[in-house]
Length: 339
Length: 246
Image (cartoon, rainbow over all chains, first blue to last red; front, side, top):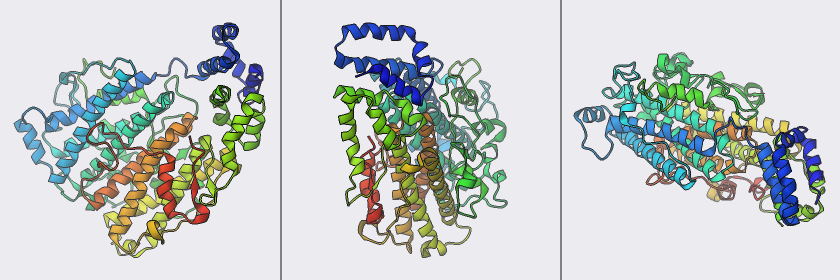
């Protein structure tokens, strides 16, 4: 086989192939050495290694372990939120936890306890996966690192009633789960080198989306409603303004900034574009209706579709720095968890 | 043997920038004599058309997009039929279920038409045709007059959609297509959760769709498994062959 003919063929597709290889001249030289030592049958393997290196993400892109550890931080955040509010399933319930639980209908409480179990299971799964990869998981963050009131340690922040008001608890829960959905989507491209991990991450991603949907369903019906799904979203104007208090089960536009816009708007806004982001991937706001360079309003030939539906049909990814900034809202000022 | 495998893996940029037309694929493969025989063998399935599954989605990124396009065609056709059925039309204009079924119809139509446009832009010659659905026979029967039948079918389609996207993502090589699939699958999961809550409150997730007693991971499914169910709802001339997705 002719290796250089292969590279010539690749050049037809990617004119920069020589640059990619040349910038890694040492690897190329290395391969030359290999050619003398290896049998002809093994040469394609060496070529594959070189091309893999040439086409790998730049060093600015996170590794698989980096992405899993970042996901693990978010899962700890979510798990601790449910554990603190509803009890961790091991220790006796506090008076406050009992009071909060009593603020929910039976179906709503069982839903929240399901989410608590799922998030704690995600924590364990990610820790096991990191161990299996031979990577080091982040230390289990101390509960004292978190302040779910958004007070950064004052315990009296903008969500001061997070663990005493069922409505506030649901508002924060929706915010955390919607953030998780965007974060996993943003992390997925960096997991493409390990298909098993990629598939697992996506299997967490859709569970987070199911949680978010259920929380939104509960929020529009009210914490004490036992038949939340029977309640339709408010439709006084049919516009985003109603979505803060009465969200759909999916994100509609930017949901008017979410459950508490002064604190939650960033969850639905555009992100930044960190170095190392793969070509063609951006982090637009949730009200985006341009996908893959195509305007959804013109790709659809069916008439009569409401404008907001075009944004609802697609969730958007979010980048690590933007997710960190959102997550910091719920940690104490001295915490470096989401630094 | 090892040669052709390695070569196939060594050209990720091919499908990344110019989704492969079969002719250029052959030309490319012909560049190395050793690889040709095996690559041709790998393609032979594309060329034969088994009578039972005439619509071959193809392979590579375009194959996955075609697979998604097929699923979205089915979902959009389903909700269109729902909106023409007496269960839906008997619902009050302001009922939560009616409004949700409207939104689901809009979203799936938008997905379908987007994928059609995206595949056409990337590889017009490789797009699968418009599929013909069949909701009237045997395992594919849906009674559009009853709540139980409509909502149960919606649950099947939405849960299947989530499992299908999650299971096919690993066959995508271009990160931007992976993210596009991710943008759609979480919306399908939001749909699935609400439909399940309609059927039985607080069942937005369950042991049938996720390993809720261990890892809390959704249960993704391979294209072949998905299609074995999806083909029940497609006419004979529209049944799917996903053997190229691997």
